[in-house]
Length: 457
Ligand code: SF4
Image (cartoon, rainbow, N blue to C red; front, side, top):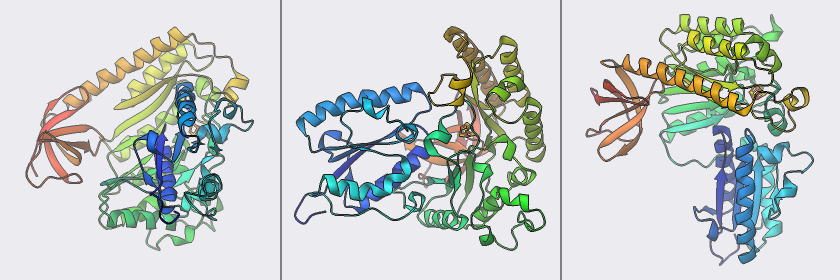
């Protein structure tokens, strides 16, 4: 920052998933190092950034909508820098989206955030005088709001090319962070009061350590890679074990795994002591024919077999999933297979989306979006009702049981947080309970989306 000037301000809007949120924390870290402070008020910001999501058309529409506001703002304050990054900028190879974003000064895929210091200095030398950071963006320190929970990206990009998905185009091929960097980041977070870590990756359990020699000799998942070289391909269980050894960490959670990388070692690691009693395992469809068109690379039977092994290893584990209904060519019978798979797995929660074609994906090139909108909506409704019915039944079964809750909110005498099974639990707050406390709560009442109880410890 130039001497004598006021501290510059940035306003950052994040759309989409937790990984985007974690990327935004890195952007905030870069700007804080330049002397910027964050503001909630875009009208006073010197730099306004949009970290975009491309998963659905509606997410992209929201960004175009914001551009209208930016045009008006720039008429009043032409010196404001407007920047767009994230998945839209990442997958827009022909700059077609950018053409619809008139007021944008900076437009860059996420990893290029390392150039923000130089770009801002070129556009606004009155604000900063700086150069690009010669580092991999995943090495940048995220600037987090102090909390007992933190998200840690261990991998970005994806090699799987599911035919409906923009991620491989928006984020590129799979890239994994060194295990040493991940462990150091988590140790540092724990020293600063974090008790729960969620590891993030597009297919988090396909994690491959570029520095596998950093694992401890007593890590039970380390195998002799020289005997079976192909085992070098996956080190997720090894990483989970190392993280579990960090003193002060209480809970470990990860999302989103791919069914094909649920190896026996990873399933075994579900029983490590700090692992939460919940797994989110996206299935997307229950019909092998649909899964094949989606290029998910597993069959219905293979998915069910993985679920069977998980339940055998950790009975009572809560399960979540992602489902897409109305994928091109999905017949009524094929949809019924998704319903029956849902029942068989007995998922605790599902995030169901109605298929929408995303430009640039293989799905758009190969298939016609032939399931009518109304039918997609009907199928979505069936799965929603099934989820509500299952959730109600499962929540009722908690009455009288005791669950461990990490408190993340306290308001008007009521504390709330997630149980180990990722169920929302509320209870009257008692003396000594603060945000970040882990308490045992006996459940008295089950509502549709939360459990109510009383602290017993
Ligand atoms: S596994 Fe498939 S759905 Fe998941 S990020 Fe990769 S391409 Fe997308």
